Length: 283
Image (cartoon, rainbow, N blue to C red; front, side, top):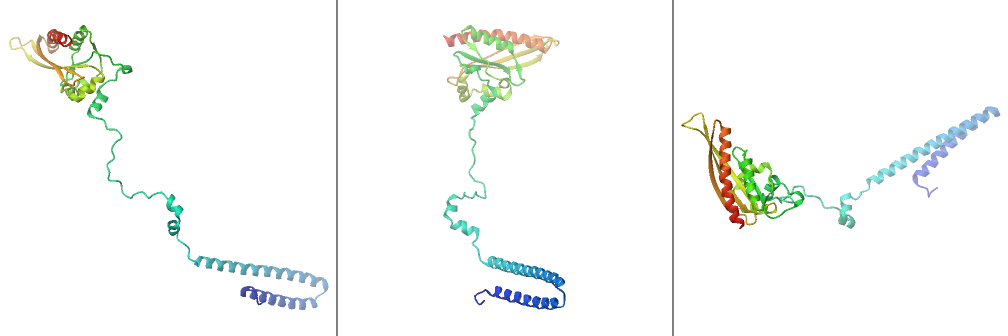
């Protein structure tokens, strides 16, 4: 017994003491009873003793297990941070920690449109099937201030162009005939004009203005003066090749009639001047 641990040695002493006491009590009881009763009592006492012994041993086992757990918890353990820092694998495979603040470098968009590209994107209609032939003219006639269109003047100009074997193509959206957008075209910026060479060879712009007045001699009549400024821009060079300025006066009982008469007169004059100019340009 000297080789046993101290805990187990004490357990055996306690078990021996309990067994001796139970044996003495059992012997005294059995001597005072008949054989059948003594057998039943002996069996019962044996079962009770066995149950007590099992319960005592389990209690001791749980106490030793708890003591071992407390000893294990008291041992120092390496921190996860230290383990990760000392491991070469963790160092080589760990992803870098993102910065806590945003980068000060400006982020540029993947594609920045130029001013010319933005204008074309909004105001120009792509040619069907990207077909582009030579001798194409784009014609716009408009009053950009009042957003009035003059289809008769535009048709007359187109007919003069076709008389000399050229053609007209509708590449501009309605937005290009109004306000600042028309003024941008009329300013004839060379970069924009050359960029439009993908769509036409010449651009003819007619900027119309009107002046309505009452006739001082016949107050019941209205007098309207139409003035047109024409620019012919070459998209190959980006320059204004020709300029025309002409006016016509129309009278009528109201503004509509006066305008129609002025437009008819202006169409006749403009066709004559354009015919001479385009003929000399092409020949």
